[in-house]
Image 1 (cartoon, rainbow, N blue to C red):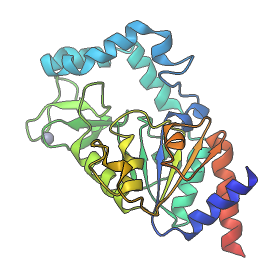
Image 2 (image 1 turned 90 degrees about the vertical axis):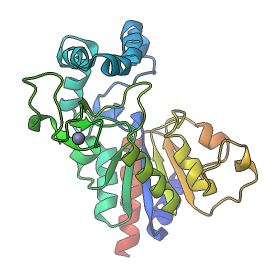
Image 3 (image 1 turned 180 degrees about the horizontal axis):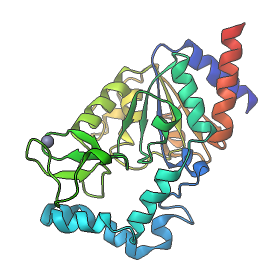
Image 4 (image 1 turned 135 degrees about the vertical axis):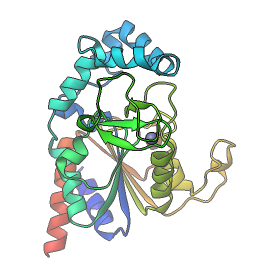
Length: 275
Ligand SMILES: [Zn+2]
């Protein structure tokens, strides 16, 4: 493990354009429950899961009823949002913020909706599944802080006249096109991808490591088996091996908690810089 941490530090120091992909695993250490683990939100409350599947359709059908539901703090969703808003970044988040300050990490693309990367100090964060801290116009794509939005009349509307929705991307809701396009650009541009706390099984997010590896968008035709592999370095930090490990998409896995391993990698990077 020590060797792999040194190797990751060396790879990061030598990279020209490193980015990080993060998932639920980096936030569990901040006390944020995951969805599908043994104590996950869906695992322990099937009814809430069924409701979550209907939520986006409710927005499309009856935006006012949708807003009334998400503003009700007694539901599971309201409690979850409150819990998230109180959460604080952990050493894993702070390590990634430090890598950005050192000029090594250029971007974080996260599946998490908790806003903890920004709280930790990362400036360039693409929130792939949205954020609990923002409200988004479904017509023009503008985002606003909750405090900027008047909720006197439901549903709230954007200056452009479009409907506003909370920024969190629900089941069956398309990923906002701006975030999706930018994420793909970053994946195609990077020469190092550090994947932290995600098993990368949720699509289309799970395409990003494959885009980086094969530099090709035509992944579903089986062409990835023949496409030339790019020389991008792909490093996983995760509690368990993932499909990316098994398929050889990643170069290596450092197995363990992101909150312990990422700070150790950053320590090694800094040692390398100071010598
Ligand atoms: Zn708008």
